Length: 125
Image 1 (cartoon, rainbow, N blue to C red):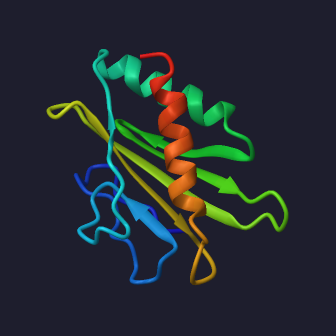
Image 2 (cartoon, rainbow, N blue to C red; image 1 turned 90 degrees about the horizontal axis):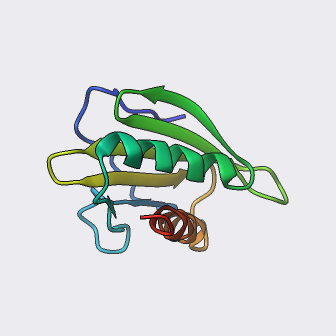
């Protein structure tokens, strides 16, 4: 499990393998947009937690300040992916990183997960 220091401003970088996406990635193939919010930061963080709690096979495993770490398990083989979030209140965005723990390619699973979580997060803004 790769977890960042909750006091760090950056999420861990994606490895060179194509099984990770991040809003802080420099590589366009791994880059996703952060989650933007207009509500109060505390409400945005509470909304994100609600979305994660409602996501299938997803468990929040760490929370410290503006940092959240969840584990998402695949349906069939129960592979674990790490999904991490770090709020940037100054820019009113939540940075996101989703990465497979095993394998080389994820066939787009992490990107689809992030976009599905983003849609759920945005549904109530």
